[in-house]
Length: 427
Length: 81
Image (tube, rainbow over all chains, first blue to last red; front, side, top):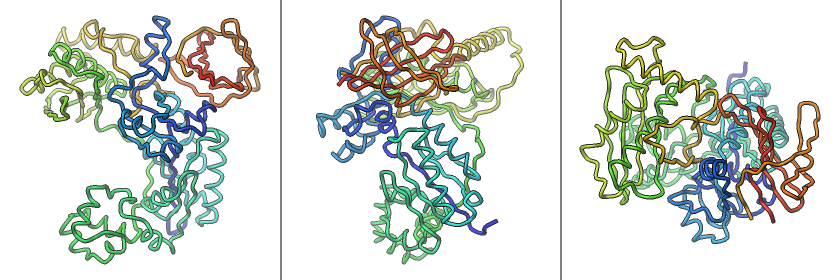
């Protein structure tokens, strides 16, 4: 067993946009962007039920953001998380495409399957990036690691498509492997052997390090730290005095050191939440109630699907002027019914809800998750609700999400979002 | 023109091992010879398995939906140059 680990980090380039360009060759070489409101809900309901058609160039993308820009769009100034109106102002010829989460989910799964084929352990870091421990698989040396990386790239090309390129970084820890993969895009391959680790870390700007965000960069600058070189010369004692345990992280990062632990253990979720930005402001309590109930049902349904109930609920609201507020509550008895979640969310929000100000976003998050008990509740009314929910969950499992809806929410229509990733269309 | 729709279509396919590849699509009065299958992806709707085929010829992109329960094909997306 080699004494030092070899970690590979892989990151798809312009993921959603590249998948769209892989699927549709006429989008290749063009400045395109994938926007937040997904196509499943934009068109499917009206197209399937009413036989209508939706032209992509007529979609309004109200209050939507760019989730991914193609490399051609990035070259012309379009950035991720930019508002769609802003992106169109910068680049009027930009083709905006509604996201297709099912497609991205499958390509993401294929990447993970390829990595698991070769690596000792794989940890998915986000939908389009992952860490892999390839210490044993590579034979413990960087020549073997480079060959393995090339095989992974060849497999991606064959199984995901030639247009779905990824950047790879290989180093002796996660921090450097990620830094390496992000140092050369698109389709980069950067190997940092241990003897080059310090020099490589010094060659990168502070903000390129995972864990050093724009606000931290500003704080460091106010202390006179503007580069990795100056961070290295900053005493560890002052760093820990200023930033507590994070100071140690900064000190290690400056020397190219970091964790080499890649864990492929599936972890239970800590919370389940949904928020939604409405295309138009909500202006009445009735609208708030209906939309909150739909969100609560989604949260509850996801919890029950994974066998959880919640003991902690947070509800929040954002107004038209982007100010917002929220409140949280703990329960003695765990809840997993959408109606119960709604009732509690309303109690939380009611004291400060000002519908006259126009509500642009509502959100509900259930945390403090505990495993659902299998038995029926003792009270007759609760037992009936429990039984009905179990039947509804069976209907969802058989026919899919959206098969049933509470009568009071029939006029509520959420558009699926790619920015929040999807949850109810497993491949 | 880039459009989402849900039109029933007739599709002639090629079987190769476990793989299915659309070869020809009849949509309304037109027949399109598929030149390339660019991407195939699956999805679940409850227990139902759905496959999507992103295919193209020289001038058109089409996304075809195959319902494996009813074996029905639908054209769900079109992009014409």
